[in-house]
Amino acid sequence: MSRREQIIDVAQRLLEAEGPESLTMRRLADELGIQAPSLYKHVSGKPEIEAALQQRALRRLAEALARTSDLATLAAVYRRWALAHPRLYELSTRQPLARDRLEPGVETEAAAALLRLTAGDLPTARAIWGMAHGLVDLELAGRFPPGADLDAVWERAVATFATASATRARHASGVGGRTGPGAPGGRASG
Image (tube, rainbow, N blue to C red):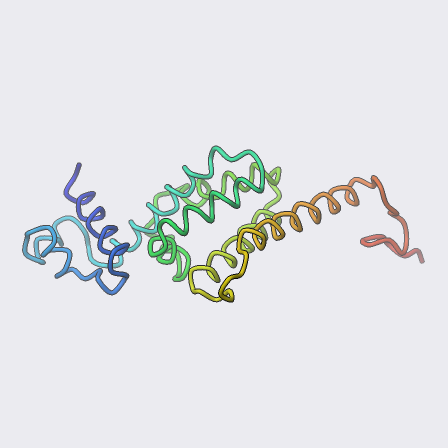
């Protein structure tokens, strides 16, 4: 393992254990048993470390989601991963993504499972991601009332999305509904 990877591993451990405020060059150096200036031989600074952690989060989430075969499983895996790595998840979703520091293709990798399950429909994939992220964010922030059945909330959200997507697909193909003037998405003549 390279020294840079060791630095990123220690940064992730600190982040998960103590939060983002623990990610200082001095603290990382102390944990590694070196002087802070020595870190700069391997990383340019805290922004590079945060970008590497964002990239790691995207890749690991992509790996977890890669084997999902339906929306319900994808949502459950997404939730489980985020709750297991709350601070890494938050670092990768609550601040701007350091796109200029990420390896090419990382975002595409992260979106692959959603795009596969939505047959490449990018707006639908983004809507599902937004729904899942919103629910995870609320759960991590403790915003649901005590005793709320969060499993039921997730099940309902997924079922609602699945129903809406199926209805949209039927209407788009002209199956099972009106397609002329006055129909949702239909054109009026004249």
